[in-house]
Image 1 (cartoon, rainbow, N blue to C red):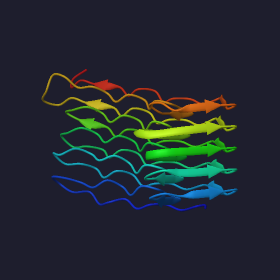
Image 2 (image 1 turned 90 degrees about the horizontal axis):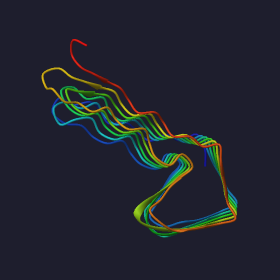
Image 3 (image 1 turned 45 degrees about the horizontal axis):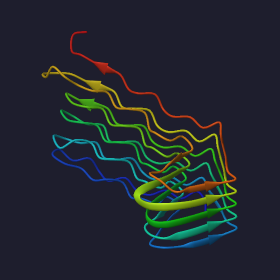
Length: 212
């Protein structure tokens, strides 16, 4: 599964749309064996009007909606989209799960190599907050997912940078945070006989006050 990209929705004045999820594949439930998921990407979030920028697409390589099993696979060089840039509002967050995004159910990940995946940067905010960088560059497991991971390696994955924030007429803005979990982001689960090495998280954005 390689070199696929989801679309980006067009900009709008008062609102916007999120990008599609699952650059390589989007599955309700899947069993994937001895495969290569490489070079896929999700699109960027739309630039926002007064309702703010939208998030980038999630799951650059795979988006798994419910219980799934992945065994003996290579997941590499996939990426998620950046958050939308806002005009007079907040920036969108970068997409989570550069390699794999697991939304719910159980995830069995066995004998897999997950490397050189990345998540998108947060979009800049105008007169409001900057978006956060996407989290879980190798693997992102949402709160409803229970992963069981063994004999896997997570190497040199990188999360996105936080978006900048620009102040115009208000007195408080906040730059976005860098994405969490360079190798893996999860709320719980079981890991055994795994290697997690050389991963990195993105820097936070900067805030620029008018006239500074």
